[in-house]
Length: 335
Image 1 (cartoon, rainbow, N blue to C red):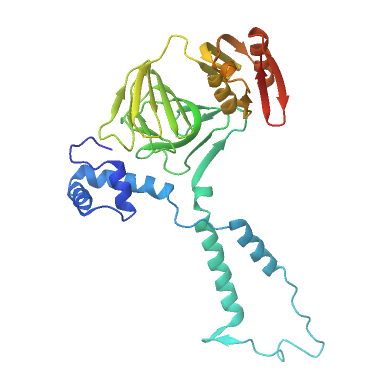
Image 2 (tube, rainbow, N blue to C red; image 1 turned 180 degrees about the vertical axis):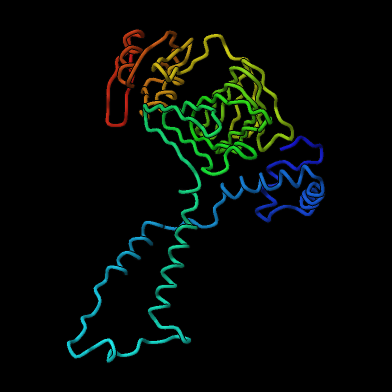
């Protein structure tokens, strides 16, 4: 959205779309819509709100099964005496044969099913399970390295027209291709945090109602529901947006705790085991705990190459002289 002193925040606009805005907020939106910038950005925010607030969630599988069962019902047998000319006339409703009404109803059901399944065919969706990583080429030439237990989606049609927009849940590295027409590229997270770029490399992690953005090269802006202005990030900046949607900026350490997805390398520098447990949950979907609180407060430093959670924990336990036990609920560390 364009930066304007009279622009309502996304929170106000979302409240307005939900018909819960105060008279003062409605007046602010009305005045903003009188400007060219407001009229342009209004439909962009409205599209975001409609995607996040579906009005109806149908059970398409159940409806399809019922329709197929109806079509497969056997027809009653025709008697030998009955001929096409002597067959009783079909029941007519309002001048239409009853069978004609069934055909129309079937067509309406089919069209309704296509409309209700709109998200499935309109969006291209990519998802990874625990330990899975994949590289995605976007229609504009940009590249995405999608992390484990993460989902990315974007519009199948018209992606390169207007604003290039993707929705991310989880973690991904973006390499955005700059367009000659300076076309915007935005990443939308579940907590309504938005990252906007022109051409750059950055990493986004959006899990557990917290979004963390690390800028490697280039320039990006970040917007949250609680901020009125866009926050401009420089290379090396790390911004964390917590549950209160207030951004916190810091500089990236030279050896920040991270995961190098390409070669399954984990890099820790004075990292508490509680943070290691969080990464294990994000990457491998496994739980690490300890009945001794002081164990999870111990810090680990080093670089580990691991294909599985077991490989990483075996190395950490050996280095820190801890006992590792696998249970039905995950892994347990003890002294």
